[in-house]
Image (cartoon, rainbow, N blue to C red; front, side, top):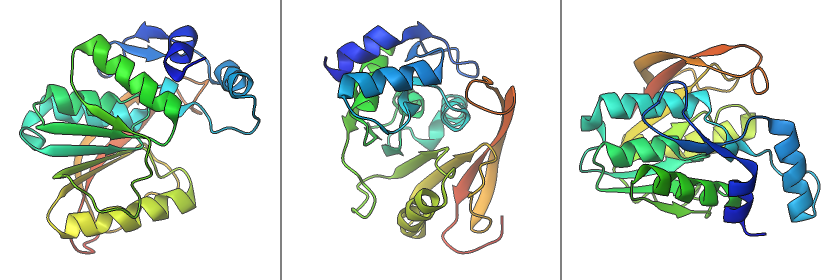
Length: 218
């Protein structure tokens, strides 16, 4: 079964709570989908199906870009760890010159492509790991990637030089444990309804931060 066929089989079109402008192929429950992913890949301990849910960080970024399209209009945008692609869709809808949705999960790439088709936007996808590679973009979006120490450190080590070079780097964080505590400027706050199937509460306070070129305290 192709990733595209799997996404279509396991999800349904739904409206994200904070961004009802979009219809996305999303799952209702995480564990059954995770089990189905292992079965179709004939492997165990596969990564969780992050792509099948509109996480608070991605929703908050999408909301910000739709409300303030000037942040990305005419710019080249990379959305790192794009998941379902909601922030990528918003960047494209807001008038970005180009959008690259990057996620190392092939199912995520398939879901993003389907979501782009469903919402009539044009973007590109990649499953390459961009960490450590030169960033060919004007704007970098990082949605909800500070939930593991090693991942957060790797992402920030790659993103901070981009901010130092004058690129706009936006980090969305719904209170994860490994968000950096310096070199950030708050830009916007949202309360995002969430599911107890995914989170430990029914809503997440999510803040959008801009990475600063120096180490100014947040």
